[in-house]
Every structure is written in C-alpha cells, then in structure tokens.
Length: 388
Figure 1 (cartoon, rainbow, N blue to C red):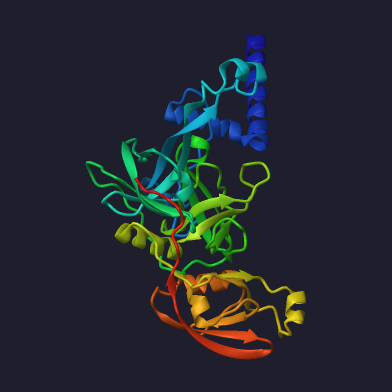
Figure 2 (figure 1 turned 180 degrees about the horizontal axis):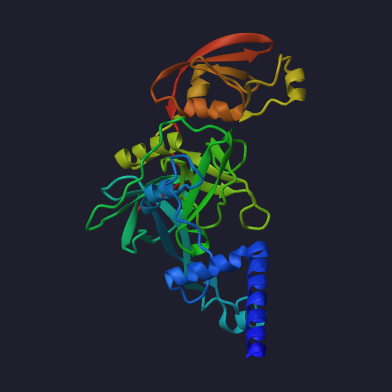
C-alpha cells in the first residue's frame, strides 16, 4: 500500500512540475488547447479576434475596390488576318503550284479591359484594344457577356468608346473631380491582366503630366507604380475612394511585364474625348498645318534665343492656316492665343484645344525680331479609322 501511495505522489509531483514549466515557458500550448475545446475544432489553431471596422483611409482599400470593380469589364476581340501559306517560301513548291494557295485566313484574338461610363452601355477603353477588331465581346464582372460595337475612336489619344446592349443596367464608374490627383496619392489599377480575371493592384501616383514618351500624339500621362500588365489596357485607375482618375494605357517594360512604371490617361482628357465621341462619333481638334522642331541649346544659340522655350517651324503646308497667316519655316513660335509655347508638344496641344474657325494670334520670333501674326484655326485631319 505504501508503495502505491509513493508512486501516486511521485506522479502528481512530476505532473505539477511539468505544468509549471509549460505555463512558464510555453503558455500558448495551454491556450491552443483551450481554443480547441471551446470551439470544438478538429485541430488546435490560433485565431485573432474579429477586427474592428476600419475607419476611412485605413490600411484597407476594400471599400474603394467594392465601388469600382463592378464597373470594370473585360473586352475580348478577334479579327481575321491573312497568313502566307507555310510552303510558299519553298522554291520547289512555288515552281509547281505558284501562288495558287495564296494567303490563308486565320482568326487572331486579343484582350483588354474597359470602364462602363454610362448605364446605357457605353464603355470607355483604349483604341489599341479594339483596333482592327471585327468581333468584340464584353464580359461584366458578374459573368454576363455582351456583343459590342465601336461607337468611335481617337487614335491620337489612344481612346475609344464601345456600346453594349444589356437587358438590365450595368454598374457605372464615378468620375473623380478633374485635376484633383496629386503626386503621392494612393491609386488602384483594375483590369484583366493576362486574362487571369478581374484583378486589383495598388500603388501611388509617381508623376503627373508625363509626355515626350512617343506613345501617343497627345500625351499627358499619369505615372504610377501600381502593377499594370498586358490585358489591363483600357481598365480603370481609381483613387482611394474608388473614383475614376485615369484609363490604364501603357507600361515601360523590358520583359513584357510590370516593372513599376505604368501610364494612364488622366480623366480630364478621357472625359473630353469620350463626350465628343458619344456626341459626334469622332474628336475635333484645331490645326494650322505646320511641322515643328524642338529647340536644343545649340539651336537656341544659333537663333539668338534667350532660352529653349518655344518651337521652331520646320515646315509649313501650302494653303494651310499657318501659310495664310504668314508663318514661314525658320520662325520660332513663342505663344498661341496668349498662351506660352514651352516646347513642340505643348504647341501641338495648345492649337488642338482651339476650336476650328476661331481667330487666334501667333507671337513669333523672326530674324531677331518679335512679330504678332493673326490667323484662323483649321480643323485637324482625322486619322484613318473606320468604326463598325
């Protein structure tokens, strides 16, 4: 009996010692057991308490994504292209069959994104997403699919509007106030990268007013480090409130994927182009018919200019508004309609913003003298593009 009692007391003593050590060194082992017993879980896990509601502007942008994601759609395009017969490069084949087989028609597909801007079914996207397409399908975020047609396009800003006919109204994006974006603001890029499905990436506004990139004729890009990849083109760039601030358009990449430098067309330009396309099917811009050249420091010294501001007139189209106004090659254009010309790109934008038929004054520098000439703005010729 004494032997059994001795064994029992020893076991109790050892158990208490083990419990003390665990409580001191590994208290979570006891907590896991308590959680498992309380919840009836199959395995003992550690779970954090349910988070309190995050205030606006906190670490999560779920609310911004919730507002914007339904209005971003996927765009699938296809077109018929003719490929040469693979044997036509064989001289023996050509000797016997000549060009009898000709080019072989094939279907080529493409993908991109778009933003629903009107409950009537108008979708804003990039021109290069729908360029040349003879079939366009739009898929909404809830899985519905619609046939679409191009309403109009503006290749010079790389924007286009397509129209879908839905049985019920589509969710519509809300535009941010014009010119409200600042460098450093948080932005979300929404689209269908590589066709994997609706995706939201985040970043900040890295720069505003990016130009001279050689992407479009008219450039005024938002630069962001939010990941933008092939398939994101035409998708939405939204702010932390889920409001549209830009249309994702291009990336700088040496690999084909995102390298942290993406570009979006600002909503101010996109809205103006979109409204003109919906109203008239095209975009009207001012034009004077000149070819311009940037002013380098060497040219500034040669023309005896105080700086590199302005644009050198390299050529004038005969019979154009500039020709009628008396502008000649070699003139340096300093201002248009009272607005200073910083460089060749800004001159193009200043003139494009003027309505055709409006009189305007041109301040130029010719042979060391400043002159003021008057002319009437013409209508910029439209690039070749045919809508459905």
